Amino acid sequence: MILVYDSLTGNTRRFAERVGGALGLPVMPLAHYPGGDALLLTYTFGQGEVPGSTQRFLAQHAPQVRGVVSSGSYHWGTNFGRAGRRIAENWGIPLVAIINKAGSQADLERVQQWIVGQS
Ligand SMILES: Cc1cc2nc3c(=O)[nH]c(=O)nc-3n(C[C@H](O)[C@H](O)[C@H](O)COP(=O)(O)O)c2cc1C
Image 1 (tube, rainbow, N blue to C red):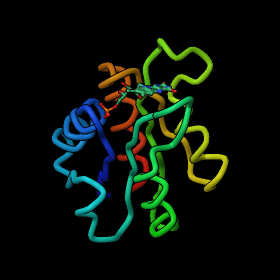
Image 2: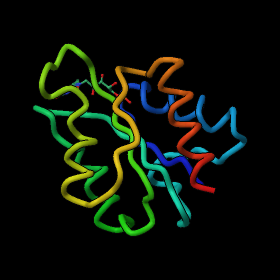
Image 3: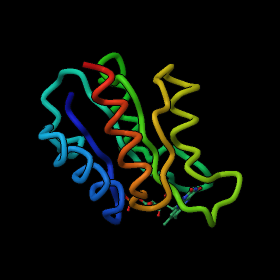
């Protein structure tokens, strides 16, 4: 499993690196994705929107994306982390977790467990 992330201010990247680092898995930004089974980690922008960069990635690679994690901020209320729910609905990709900012220890463990369960 490759962990591929989209991150504007670094929260999603930091979470992806923590998850992948502990499991010894490759972690990379969208532009470096070489293909293969992937967990997509992205963030929420606008009013609960999927970043355009993530939308373009999905248009090309959605069939290889096994799950999605979305970052957001509690501050956004009902739009909290909504990018992940939108991706699940629009692309049929399982939603693994919605995390606040760079995520908690519980988020880390949950996502790692999901990855281990995939292999
Ligand atoms: C302009 C803007 C709009 C945002 N809109 C939302 C939103 O609708 N829902 C949400 O949960 N978070 C929203 N956020 C918060 C980011 O998703 C959150 O800070 C996330 O951790 C950023 O990830 P990154 O550091 O990987 O870029 C917004 C942030 C910015 C700057």
